[in-house]
Length: 498
Image 1 (cartoon, helix red, strand yellow):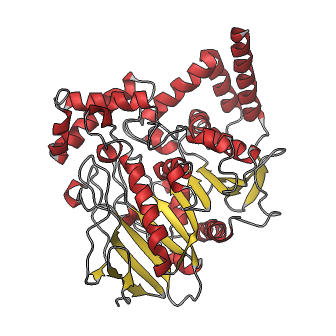
Image 2 (cartoon, helix red, strand yellow; image 1 turned 90 degrees about the vertical axis):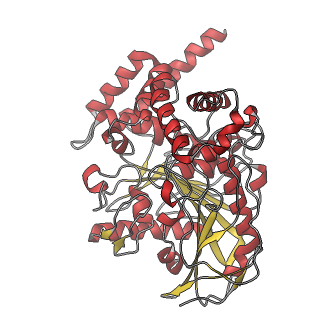
Image 3 (tube, one colour; image 1 turned 180 degrees about the vertical axis):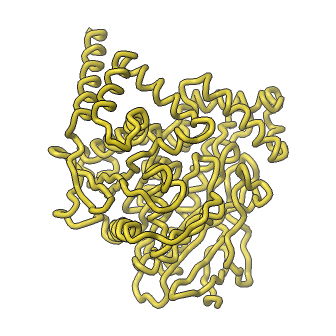
């Protein structure tokens, strides 16, 4: 059944009504030429039927379903018959900056149970969204994916009231690469005043890429395509050839540089003028409630990939560079001595180094600056592959967040099937969703006694498992040895300066 037409700044749209929720899918918020800033879509007069997801952003495995010009669309789920403006959850998908899309996240269940308005977006991926080419003559081609998300946020601010949402109650949210974009986006002057809360799940430790590394990636891609002297020609390279060239560069770069990553938001001095963590630490976002979450065994998925992901090598190299080989061996020995029966000490060390500790550091910065922040870890093993085999690794929380209890949902872009949930899945996922919707609605994920905000002292963090519990972060041998190594490193630096 179709909904009534809803007016947007580009023209009227109709969606599909089912089970008390109205869904508007594939709503264009922008159009884009390759390596150029997105612009508003062409206006239309007749009601546009938005009942199916829009084209995927070009990405490996889906080039046949992709459309460069019209992939910038968003999806909206809004409860029917609500007589007040509802809070809005604006979700940025993950996928290592190279895969994914809003079509992998059906927000109807969350919308109905909020009640809330749920928005998922597409943005340009891989080289089309992140290749830094402004210095090579394509003057607009810096941080295009970041600009895409800003345009989507502007669209929501201008239009969401007509869909029952409150433009003054938007929560920025994202997972993995999307969480990195949330952290970067939250600090931009262009986003100020357009959101009131932020949720970042499994943001990588390096949320921002240096300009020098991004420039090296761009130069290598151009050279690989034989375009070092005619960079503008990359705008007409067929997509399969472009993505194949990028893949070859990525394989080599993983072993030849300190950072194995090809893409991500870049500290370019223009679109992203400052290191986001510095902005948080200085207190510019102290009025923004922040929830930072991760999964217990983040790195298992990347260790088990074939070949193991580049971040495995680069993370170990980074720890060795910080503390020396002796410091690395000391850490690994402590992890071996304190490992759970089912825990890989090497994986646990890498998970802490790349995921958990950077998230905790950001939480400390925000709390010290006067901001309200909550920290969580997802320890539950969903009865769904790959988590059933790998445990609560990267994405386990996301699978439960978007579940339609009592079932996990299909992920068409990721090519993962859903399925029935166990009673434990339902209990943990229900608790996680309840906390998220409370945060989206009030800016607080739980009552203070059940989950205190993060701050000085015991640094409480929530553990989503069965049962739900809150524990102090800064206890145990692992925490102490990290602290001792950091203190030793600080003393060495002070001695050098003296």
